[in-house]
Image (cartoon, rainbow, N blue to C red; front, side, top):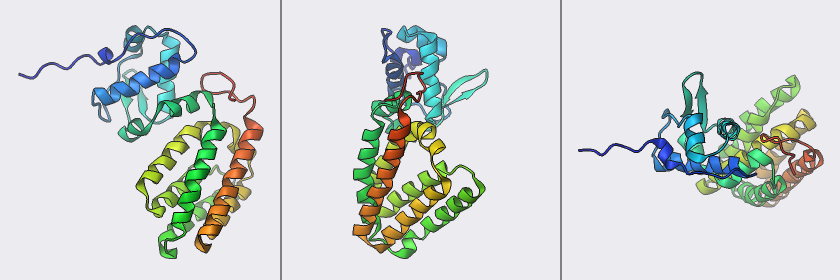
Length: 250
């Protein structure tokens, strides 16, 4: 006879209220997802159940669930609670990702890490054939159209960098690029995208594409210049911005 599964709230432990409590709630929920072997569509414990199990405040639990929703890990169904949306994000996400999304801390360090990783991605991609790189032209066409119309192109740029990483042929690197984008995405939406010229953004990616076609030296140099530009804009505009938790980004 199969033993009954424990209540999901039993995977959670009491917390003491302190500045990192929201991050700790997130860690516990992510651990719960793994330990309880939840699948997309499975229901998470309710706000009340999490509050009772962790001794955290209701607002902290609500903010933690809101952060998970922002990261695309869970979805909220009106009157029904929170449900696991995807396993991929939950399996890749780490405590540091949660910290970036909530606080915006160390954003420049994440960009510096991107520089190390994506310069190598660009170098590897430069050894691919023009035919293998041709899919990037379709993404650039979409970015060009968005620049002309004034529409946002965050998703297009994300698609460009992910496609480049996949073309490079190293699956681990591609996954790491995705994680790093998760880490800075919410911060960049607030402090980067409102402060750029869309045409310049398109031209920067087009120049990067041409550099990859030209060879590894040019590819590495242009990726470094591209990310230096991103870091400069973020650094200029991040001071005084507010994270999801209401604390200043720094």
